[in-house]
Length: 311
Ligand code: AMP
Image (cartoon, rainbow, N blue to C red; front, side, top):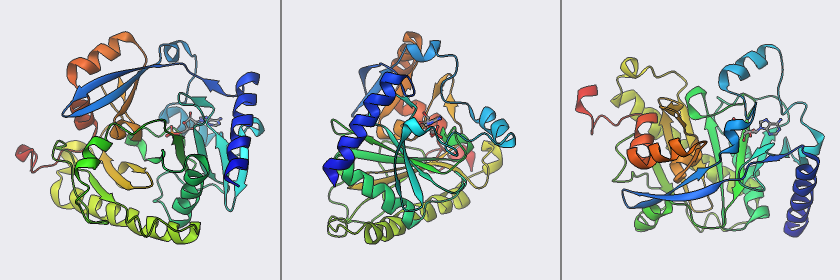
């Protein structure tokens, strides 16, 4: 089963690439150390030249009015398979090979929270793609870096550990399910380690229930932080809040968002895994000079414990 999906993924990816239905963008990775983490900044100069990459949210909002949704109908050359109430597609604009999307068949909003069935499905594909090395993420809401309004989770296979796992490795003493923060991040975020025993099963539905429960405990903690700690008006926060959610087989992280970009640098969920994307040498130099943590801080929501002036 695993081999079948992987084989079909590789075959369909290569075919879509060769016919030009899938656009892969070459990039080079520069390590940018900051606050004890070797952040990865991917420099993809050809993104600057592309007349239309992934659309901006404004364009998406217009497209919603004109009923254009790239996932319904989807491009059949990008179709991998159906899985219950989802279709699994290749990402048309991909920077990391074999980047896939798990999309609801029926239209659901990208501003909706995740349900156990969404997480069970994404877990299923994590297991199919690369047993331990993959990350799934959900860019939720206008300021999160999302460009499409139709509910979709994204999944990428990983060749190596994620930069942010340096912090996770230091937190291995935490109890599974205990919500905690990274000492180096002064913005609101909530992390938890998943229970290896509860993740050891093979039933997507059972794992989905556990992941759904864990996601909701992070979501509740995030809402509580925003409710009790934020001066929402001063920061122009919206309700429901925008946030990034990241999940691997061993941990989960949620980060509410204040802005989609800092200066010219856009940030989506992968930024909080320690991976940024830049389109010019100038932007790369800018990131090195400013530091990734500062950029993350600017697009997230300050934690008033560290910013008393906001209270
Ligand atoms: P987000 O920008 O987080 O909402 O994710 C949307 C994803 O869909 C991005 O990774 C885009 O590259 C990808 N995408 C945009 N248009 C299409 C399309 N027509 N078919 C498949 N993937 C697409």
